[in-house]
Every structure is written in C-alpha cells, then in structure tokens.
Image (cartoon, rainbow, N blue to C red; front, side):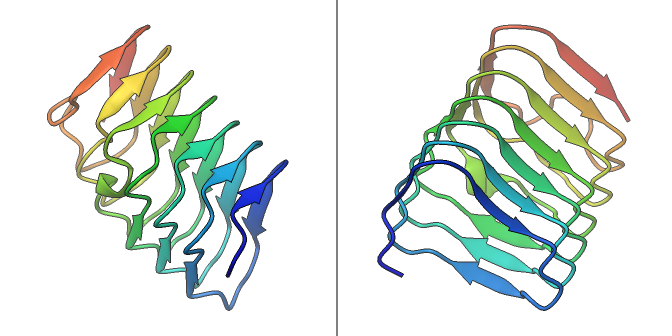
Length: 148
C-alpha cells in the first residue's frame, strides 16, 4: 500500500478471482501498465497515479464496470482499451495526455471517449454505443478513424 513508484512495468494479468484493486499511493510507473484478462475485476482505483511512461493496456476485463485514475496526466505511449464488455465510461481518464495512439475497440457498452490530447492517431472501432467523436474534447496530432 505504500508503493509510490515502479521502475519498469506493472502487469496485473490473468487473476481470475481479483474483483477490485486499490493502489492509493502509486504516483508513477516508468514503463507500461497492463490490466488484462482479469475475469472478475469490476473496479480499480489509482488515486495518486499521474504518469505512465509506456503504454496503458486495459484489455479483456469482461466484468470491469468502472475505474478511477483522477490525476493521471501522462501516458507516454499508447492507450489501448479493448474487450471490456461491461465498461460504460472512460471518465476515469479525463484529461490524460496520450503520447502516441488511442485505440478503443470491442467494448460493447462503452459510451464515451477520454478527454485530453493524443500525439498521433485515434482508432475507434466496433464499439456499439459510441457515436463518432461526440464528447471527444481533445487535441490530436494525427488522424481520427471511426467504425461503429
């Protein structure tokens, strides 16, 4: 609970019984953050996290409903949000600046996109409830690709 910084990657993957995660003092991850394939995960909270130096992978967490990273300002590389069936909102990422690409796909119930800036492209595909770029309050350095 007192961990403030990780030099390298943090991987939270394939934990079948993990239902929630709370890391109250974590402020920085120099590498990537991977939250993948956690079948029972419904919520996670990183209330002090402000920097991810690499890529943020949020993938294949079918029961994930919500998360909160209220102070996250920088994702150094990409943000990938894929196959999170019960996730409705990305408001837990509001204001995060993404260094490269935003890739959002196969999130059946997702209704919004994060606000912030994107260094290169935004690719939004196969999310049934997202209607184009509505609500996308961002600055973007590249192109926006959308396919419902």
